[in-house]
Length: 337
Ligand code: NDP
Image (cartoon, rainbow, N blue to C red; front, side, top):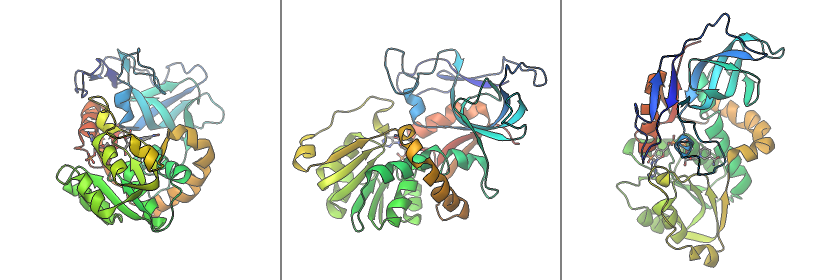
């Protein structure tokens, strides 16, 4: 039963083979392993996400989600097929999505943190971890709750080619906004233009300040990165602009930088809305399922995926995402049906 262990806390970037270790020492008897009233799941796909870096912290740092335990398998969003079940409502052959250990087979003692899920035949399971999953929900729910978007306003979206940012771009365009979007490679810039960004640029080769000075002022800033990009968005924000604080990935590996000029918050009457998608789910989950997932399935909403095959590559996929060399939603394909 191959799995990915959390083996050492990283100093800055997590090192495959050191921080994350592929381990094949455990076996499982698929026919007879005791389920103790639960289910046996064959894992098909697992998600690779920026927040996983935060879970590599030491126990002394408190956060909204438990830290990974040293010497234990990593876990996170995944989807699998049920091989055996002692839960009446969960049929063998059905699929479950939710928190799963990053290993080939998982015995889940209950459905806590899991849901039975059905798939549109046009989509692969991986999409239910991306555009039709948690990142898509983050974009849709955060925007709906906090954007207060008005037609003709200007939105700026960082990490605009990722699963969260690319969905935000498409929703903001539907709402009739002018969209400025940034990402770290020219290939990602091309994708952001394809999905409707009016102005798309590579922040590694183009000054964020210069773009915002020319194309702003910004009414809504969807922040995925924090740091200097956030400073620039505050400098070129309009009066009463809304800042949706979704993530601050520029500080995840090397620590956050202090805000350069917080006084903009006062003089420009800015609103800052930090949020975690989990808290918005009860309010918007039904709307997401009814409105967003069908548009993903029909091709109206576009997405990119960065699929890696095999749990032995999970550490590399996570590092690629944290370094920005990934090219879409990070998913590790563990097995076929
Ligand atoms: P992605 O799959 O797009 O991967 C992360 C991307 O971040 C990289 O591809 C890279 O893109 C960019 N990046 C990496 N390092 C830096 C850096 N130092 N400075 C600027 N950009 C960097 O991520 P997601 O779409 O899954 O997530 C986007 C953001 O949303 C993250 O901050 C994440 O933590 C947050 N998030 C928040 C949630 C919530 O509930 N609040 C839920 C889900 C995600 P590039 O090439 O553009 O640099």
